[in-house]
Structure formats: structure tokens, C-alpha cells
Length: 218
Image (cartoon, rainbow, N blue to C red; front, top):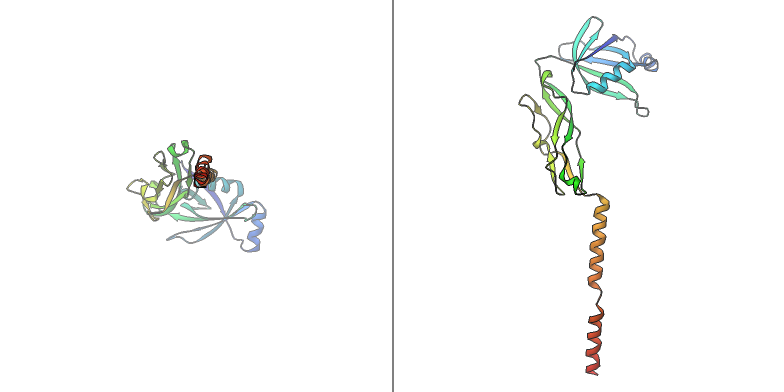
């Protein structure tokens, strides 16, 4: 899938740039090794769609005026209340040069644990990798069918990627684990408590024996 984006150079900053946002524009900044930083703006709907499709791991063919670059989305700024897109930072990359990218994680397969009433908790949904642009995966799939018992887990060390891709985070980080639903834990605790209480109550038979022994002694 090839993505392209055309922007306009921007010469408004500060309060004037804020006015562009109010008029339905997104502010963008382009930077990278060996290139001059460039301010730009683009139509909200167009930029928002590209951000949704590209994420932080899909190269974009960018045109700003007469300049053309291959870029990755480096950072995104949204309104904290409305979540409307305000600003995007684009990093210029080169086809043969390794870059850092953030790749989504997708859990696939049916975990045996879920068939037994347990739940699979996802602890990581994206991961930072390094690769040349053409080898950046769109998604990293992880098979969870082997998750069965409570405490079973998948860590970064279990991820299988091509030799051209380097994972940049700690191998020990958890991606997913098997847990027991809270309601099920509470139910089991109640059953154990009830069993313990029943064991502490003397039986009628036992009480009768004690009374009979007392009568004989009398």
C-alpha cells in the first residue's frame, strides 16, 4: 500500500497558526538528517485520513511545493478534550537508511484459556523496531493459542520477526498474560470459606457421643 500526501508551505506561526487550525487546517513540521526543517499545513480531512492509515510505521510520499520527501509520522498532537488533530511531526527518511518505527501488535489465534473461562490480558499493543523503510512490517502478529493456564504469558522475547528487523525494547516486557476474572476468583474464595466454616461446625453425632459419655460417668 502506497500512501502520498500533498501539503502547502506555511509561513504563519503562533496565534496566526492557531487561526489556521480554526479554519480546518492541520499544522505540520518536516525535519530530518540533511534537510532543512519545513513548516507546512494541510486540509484536516486529508491529513487525518493519512494519519489513521499510516500510523507510525508506514512511509508516506510527501510533496510540499516543489520538494518531495519520503517521511514517517514521528509525533501527533491532538486537542486534549475533543481529540481533534492539531499538529503532526514528519521525519524525513531515506530508502536504504535504518529508521525507528512503532509497529502495531496483533494477537491471533484462539487461546485455550478463554475456552475455560479465563481471560487473556493485553499489556502491549505496539512495539518499537528498527529497520530500513521497505522492511518495516505493517503489523506484528503473535499467536496466543498456546496460552492455557493462569499465569501463562507472552513476552517480547517470544516475538518472531525477520532478520532485517531489530526489536528495540526489553525482551522481558510482557505482551499478554492469562488471568482469572475477578468474579471467578471471588466465587472460589467464597466456596473455600464456606468449606472451612462447615469443617469447624461439630456434627450432631459427635455431640451425642459426648453426652452419652457424660451420662455414664454420672
